[in-house]
Image (cartoon, rainbow, N blue to C red; front, side, top):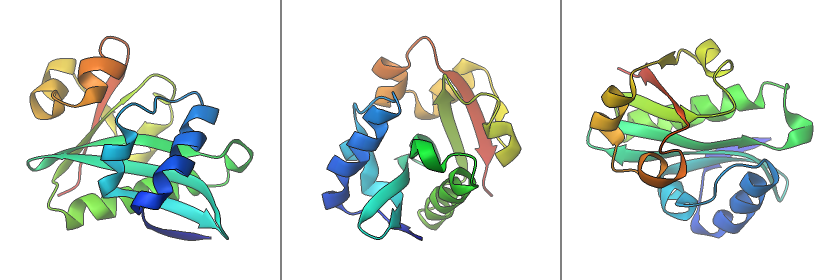
Length: 143
């Protein structure tokens, strides 16, 4: 298994993985300019992206292939995305989730008021369209 920075040719495979998991694909192509993928041979089996907003970022499109969930790969792909965010100068990551509210706290994320997250990353497609009213905002300081 190899986790590395995503390249443009990965986007279609990542979008298929997101769709299969029931996650939004809107904005994913743009987000994966700063993203990571886990490869098992030629297959992408996990992915995560970070959208930058100054020294804040939005962690999005975190996905693991269904038959690999529970293996620790989700933790690894998020850690790789966080390392990439740090390398890009991002000091705090936010996310919106509808399905993993109980999973992200184990990685150090805490629920925050929507107003706090919106002030930092509110221009993202996640906040303005995809999860506008339903996603639970969370934050993790990287510094």
